[in-house]
Image (tube, rainbow, N blue to C red; front, top):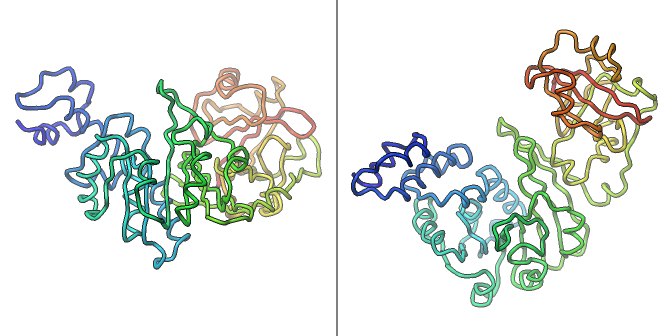
Length: 402
């Protein structure tokens, strides 16, 4: 039996169970299990790749670290907006990895360089890129700095995703702890390219990043299904203005929700609090911004833009008397609310055995509060535990409408 026959036969089988079985003669067990595991992860993360016959998949760590297909498509959209078609001549991805981002951005350019220092990943890229419609892509096995020293004289776009793990394999967040350190490298990059896109940890503080990096034209906080996955900074050679923020959320239905705001508007915004005090501050509708809004620090701009008020300066929950169409996040109709006295809690939760529970600016965790309230997870009831402006704690019962 060949490797290809074994992979096709067991493509949907449990990899751990396969690893315990005796392999047929002629089968490379390690390679085949790596391919089966990779394909199974790609079905959700990289559906177009999973549907392409003959692709090779890397070890598990590279599959975990690579971009998803959705975020790769978004990067291509960003590049298409930055550069007119006539200005897309030379592109270099200095940290090619498994090649997801490269495979979506490279088709926009006449000449594209995939640069990667890991020889095994380069061999995979040489095999995969032609199958993905990129036979002319240039695969270069080299360190990014060595490539810059020996590569083309200039580029229209350089993309770099610094490795966010130290020599011991531990995850890192700070720019200076990643490899290469783009703070040190940025002068070289901006001297060679019109634009530089840097992918950074979603845990990184944006203000701290902007203090270290110059010529930043745009910041993109990219979320998938409410979870912040990537932080992208776009540098433009010679740019001296303030960056524009883009808070992006890709929903389960593949819809794209983008909230754009200037740095000036963000800095000028202040939270607008309800005119009423206590429980009277809660309107008929409650809103929770998506994670990209919070990551980019744009939540206070929602008050004037959307006509909502904030329950507490630190709660990041908003309310209004009438529904707000197009709010960048989740919207709920308020069905009731109460304090945390035993009788009022019992009355509001009567007949409710399970609920979707969220805590914002509240002294207990979700797990602790769920245990206290004897509630299982799930159902169509949504509960928010939070603090009001006067310092009192409240539990708000809702149903989702947005």
